[in-house]
Image (cartoon, helix red, strand yellow):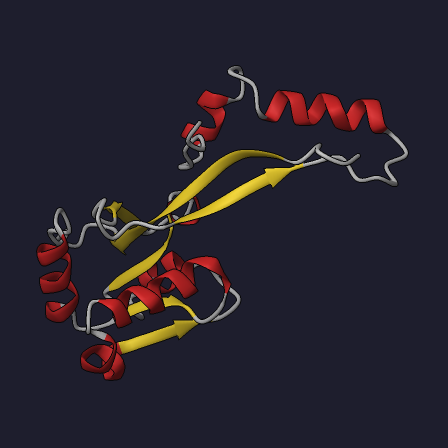
Length: 160
């Protein structure tokens, strides 16, 4: 159905460290840069939205070349799993992907000035055989009732 797309959530990018490790200060863009430069190793996804965001951020901050030798690009698993195993000191990925990983601690989101988001949308396909049920799901996912569940998962509501 045309016009049935609804943006229902967005996920920011955050930082993870191995459980129990010291949490770096990432509260400001300058603190974030210092933390990245001080880290022994940094991991983010090779592909996917958060990996693209991380790579562009490192370029934008002029850190990509300086960090090249200590950057691990991850494929096929959550970056926080690599951090939890001790294969990287710091990991960057969507917050909702970091939170459920055992053995990794969530440090916090990127500073507001550096943050970028991955948007999540839902809609009803034109070929849907269960159009009414699909429309009810879209309605629920964008409702006030779903908002606490979205936040609990580490995502945010999209701006109005």
